Length: 114
Length: 112
Image (cartoon, rainbow over all chains, first blue to last red; front, side, top):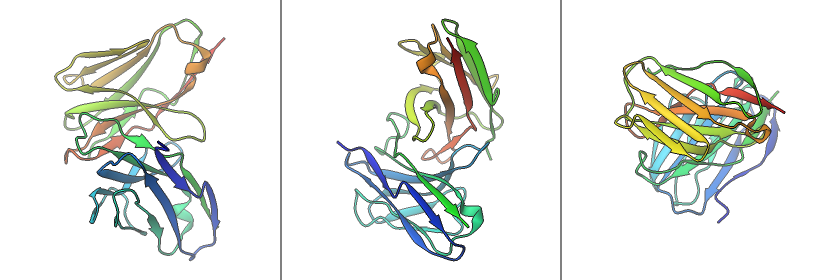
């Protein structure tokens, strides 16, 4: 199993550009989520999905879109990048029972918006 | 909303000693709490989960306690080794039962 994979590993954007961060998992997990991590702050939830076709907003959803057309993939789209979106982005997945199962994280995408 | 504090941004201890990290929360008591390890440039790795009705959980050299009265969890690493140096994050389930809120982490350095 590859686990949770993310691409790209690094990305530099100019303000106003759009891009998609890719996330895939091969563990047949129902639940996937996107977090951002900034210095001195904990991981903050952006969007999450409890299954294909179902998505919902987390704590900091503004400026981001998601979709879940398959169980395996959960891409995160930045519609119009802003410097405030400079961060490290992590995708995570787990089985549906949150209180019994491990949450697996990808290696992260480091994004810089100029 | 839930606010989480972890005792200090950085903690230095000597090899062989017990490291104790603290996670305090302010609002509702979560049904369960998790601890993760994060190495530089990598994603967090799950270590332990403890439920509200469990006072203590152990896994090899790791021990977690959960005190809902004090609204606090303690994470212990016994016989610490330089390889234990990393940032440790605590995470609490949110009121929706589906998602987690993470603390800012404590960077542990175990000195040889």
